[in-house]
Length: 429
Ligand SMILES: NC(=O)c1ccc[n+]([C@@H]2O[C@H](COP(=O)([O-])OP(=O)(O)OC[C@H]3O[C@@H](n4cnc5c(N)ncnc54)[C@H](O)[C@@H]3O)[C@@H](O)[C@H]2O)c1
View 1 (cartoon, rainbow, N blue to C red):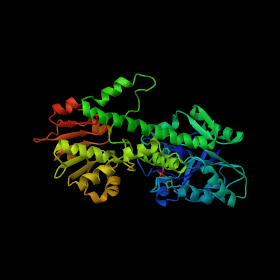
View 2: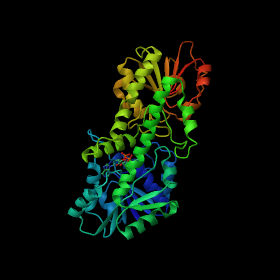
View 3: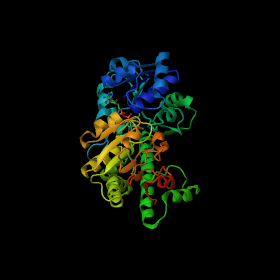
View 4: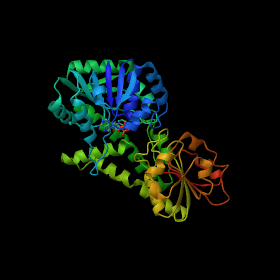
């Protein structure tokens, strides 16, 4: 099949390369000329493990190309997949302007019978907005579908090649058939539902995961009052099959490019339909205030942040990505700066990106953990990159009182304590 993917961000590049690897002819399109120029040269403009190798491999087969031209990309496409961003507006609503702009741009080049697939995360009902725009310009018949994406940054290539399921939202039999055929090499369960259910399922999945994080954070906060250890609590609740031992991350709250914006959209949507008295608004509120709360709490334990040298380890929103969108560091660093701490940051991949994102905070970014911790009064292990978890902090212990904040409960408290640090985790002594 001839496939065009519009938007060559995290989702777009991965999807384009994976569809190309199935033997389809794929064109990736973006309005960002720099991004496209880089992709044409075989360079992925962000860090995602394994993606550049796949990109180069597929470019070499001739199955995968990139362009900024809608005319070139859309005119021959059997399937046009839209994977542009849908960030939050200030009120928390999903901003659909990129989606609608892309729809408008592609509308005049569609070929007869092409299927326009919305892969971006969009609120239920969005396909009618897409249809309205297409109907104004398109001179041919076309079909619409919604195929939400469930990949995780950091493991995006693996996730796309090994999905737990593919959800296809459509209304016509032949559209289900063509899109099922497209995903056949994945050998996974294909769930066929209405476009609205597919869109709602994406929000439900992300909101559920955000709820788990918020829930265990609430439990962790209670553990702090009674000497229980949230990690032991997780071990004790996990074997119950109704609960499960997976996906428990007590810490500084959820961040990243998806959970915050998707929970906000669900909260916004619920308010607009008169269902605002609900969990989603509360989760959003609890998560938004979490970092402030924790840092204030730690302030008491460390004797205040003022004048402290703080090493912040892990600046991206999670390991194995350089994505800084809603990364905890973007709240932690300005907060510390405002509270008169001196901050040195380290990240295996996101150092440069962090410099731009938290530019005004006086953050000094260094290129090794050793350099980051060399004067530290407080070490905050914020993100669990392997390199950060495996580092020998015993070898860098200074001859002064030092606190070690384990923001993701990744360390063994007794080892950190044995090395001479005051260990401070989340929901554990
Ligand atoms: N990043 C993730 O982990 C993830 C996972 C699942 C779903 N999603 C969803 O997928 C969508 C894309 O997310 P992302 O992280 O890949 O976004 P991104 O910001 O990394 O990339 C979006 C790309 O779209 C391009 N773009 C914007 N307007 C355009 C237009 N009119 N024509 C062509 N290109 C245009 C931008 O230049 C950018 O390169 C979002 O709706 C997101 O919620 C993301």
